[in-house]
View (cartoon, one colour):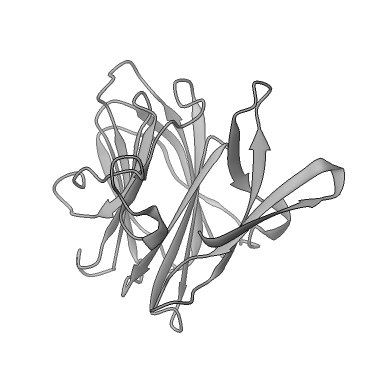
Length: 215
């Protein structure tokens, strides 16, 4: 987020708000809620009061082995799925967001549960996206395009991923907002991407209970 600010609301809750670059300088304002573990570690999750209203959710798959693709039926939707990390320290999973007709401007949200790392990268149908850098490694999360985050929380045990994809013609692309295990968030803007197809794939982690709901 650019120009981030923190404010306290009732019941001792804290919000983190800022905007992300889209076309030029300005962009959408983003609000996430801050969470703190008993040992003091700070993370972020979605603020429940402002999660977009959705239509009835649809089960896409009970379990995915290796890979599976689906039509999204809408360019704005909420995607949720459960992850079982597995035992492979190098294993990873990816959610690939594509236009309805080709892979141009595709985006992949990738998670490596055991390595506790997640990223946004340029998507492709045949392979996982290449490795992106975190801020510590010299990456540029503040651009809200391709970047990685490190030190995920509680991804060494079963967890849930929630992703909002929001397309608007005035944006000129799609916002992809991701919540990982209810304790870390990351967001990207993808210019010229209007999602019409979704591909989920995994090397080792199990992907289960894949659901989608139109916004």
